[in-house]
Amino acid sequence: MDAEQLKVSSTRWMNAALAAFAEGPESHDFAVHHAGVATEHLLKAYLVSKHPALIVDGNHFDSLLHATGLGSHAGPLTKIKTIGLVDAYSRVTKLLPKKIPISKADLGPLADARNGVAHSAIHDSTASERVFTTCLRLIDPVLEELKIAPTSYWGPYLLLHDKLVDEQVRQERVAVEALLVKARSLFEQRFGHMSPDERDVVLAAITSKPTITMSREAQVKCPACGSQGWMAGEVEAVYVHDGDQVTVDPQEVFLEPHEFACGACGLEVGTKLLLHVGDLPRGIFLDADPHNYIDGEATVTEEI
Image (cartoon, rainbow, N blue to C red; front, side, top):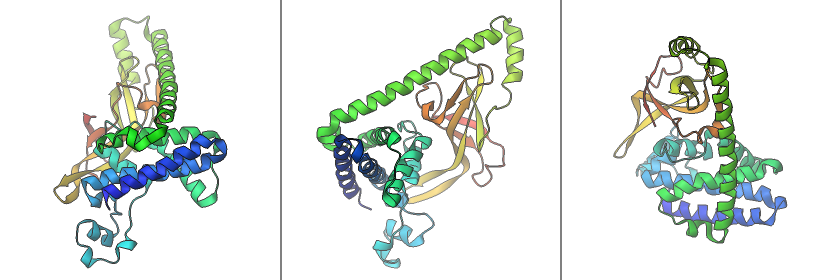
């Protein structure tokens, strides 16, 4: 539960990960495992810097007691239960919603790769570079928040870091541009011959209902054609911090986007590429009771 200790640990694990990656494909299993550990430790370092309670399992009371300075009423500190990589990511994303360039879907292969190596000595060698680069991109904004100099964290591997990140980002942006161009062309084919009034009537009917459904959907302007599109994703509770107290907001939930779709131009953007479409929100706050949001109605109140 010490932020500085977690920072140091993350740096050490990442240094070992980069060294393994530089050795070549035969060492990529070590690279993805060590990078996964380094990422988890740095995410937890950021959370602990806000409050130690943010990294503990909320269902384990003894852990909460230790995190809130009441450890004398709890069992041994060695038995404390903390969250894992995915939960740490989710909590950091809520605190830094506009800064994390990695989606939850991107995190799945990373968690699977790390666990696969740790528990079964197996990993998908064809995906190791993408998984590894996911760690680098996730860590960068957290380093900035913790005021850790990139040269200090990445050390002699800074150039390797830059090359891997730049290449992955370039590929994703090219893919997004291709989707937008295709969607705009299709929109023109479908509606270019109509008068403005006729087009408005037809679009109102086409876009009135979501073409994708998940835990919750929200209306969002399409970045390709300007029509009403729909963002779908999973809804989670919003936590409110008041001094040492962390409580659930009783009136608001957070929609974490997984997919965008527009019925007018056919644009569909999956989780991996959403972050590269600048006109789409990275998250949406919805008015809703967090205990009823799955079945209840909600309206969009703010985009971030």
